Length: 271
Picture 1 (spheres, rainbow, N blue to C red):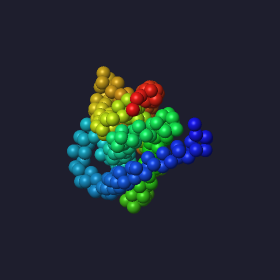
Picture 2: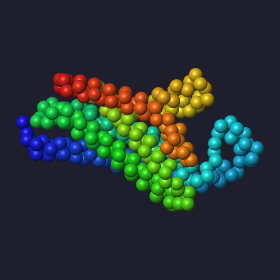
Picture 3: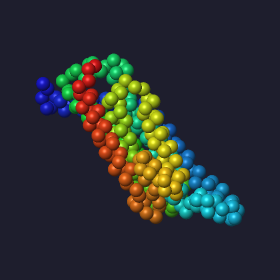
Picture 4: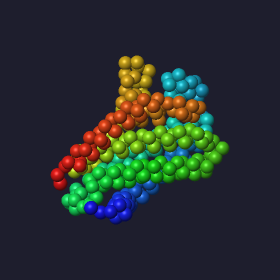
């Protein structure tokens, strides 16, 4: 058995290795999502100009139909338009990051060595999970900085900090729940490709769109509780922290149970 110092060094080396092995893909994902955010924010003046050109009677009809295109500030615009890039783009990147962490060793036939050394399987799995959580936090902080820089250039007077912080918080919780869910799934199916990592966030995202479109229907209202994207569509610039947290609670329970079962099964698995 290795002593505590050697164990800590081995864990730190594994932790750093996970970032190193995915360094190129991390950089590309950050560049792509960051660029999309900048482009989306840069379109704010053009969108305002287009909305201003809509005749009043047409605009009133659109408002009566529940289509709100009024953007009082760049923050208001981003809260309504930024979910797809910030939340969904991040979810796809982070879930693929999770899948790569857990499948790469089996794909490269390194599992026999990695899971047979002095570190326990629990130590290895929890180190990989800590790596995923760290990347999730880094992504959300970096994207918040990108948003603020782009907004300062486009309309610095229109920046309202509290809704942006709320949106970052909800994205962080959403991403933590999704990466935990995907992590648990890949503990059961560690030889799978990226299909599940891409399909799950996409499915939950489209479910949130459906839930939003039928939000006035009492019978179908339960759909909003089936996806963790709901709070992002529930927030407003006036009351950014007044959202429905029930979907988060539901997914905390689901992800927690699945990851506990997954770790238990993974510890007993033969490689």
